[in-house]
Image (cartoon, rainbow, N blue to C red; front, side, top):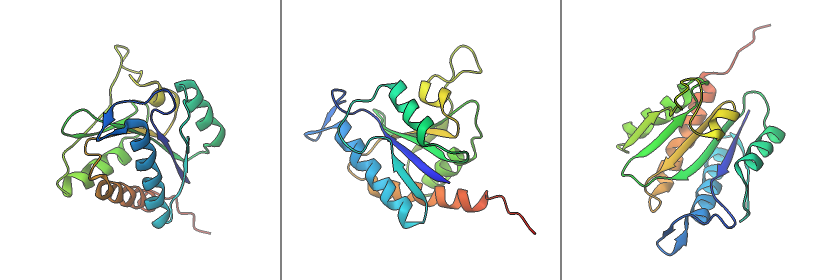
Length: 171
């Protein structure tokens, strides 16, 4: 099991300018740091993009299809425009991991929302990323200045989730 991380934006899709840094670069740094924290707790992780390139939604989905195996978790990192973080999960997937991350963030006094976002067809996700990729989440970070503590909490949540949900076979 590994965690595949998609730092949203990249290349010509720069996003907002925040503290003289483009959103695409902040998301790449944040995603690298999440990989590092996951590796520290013995969870393998991989980035969809590890440099400043533009990837369309279809490119991202194709990369995930190529590297993803059953049981892998896929997270797309984005920046939020509100005061809260958002954890968005697919209408087709189990919400347990999203809820675990949400609960751990709240326990650490980090404002957070947890939900799925649907199209008018109640069985379809609003985000194509969630619609096309199993076991996927979108995490919207709201405070890019102090994100390192949040990253540690998310990494621990994922580790705890993996440990508590492993299938154990007795022979």
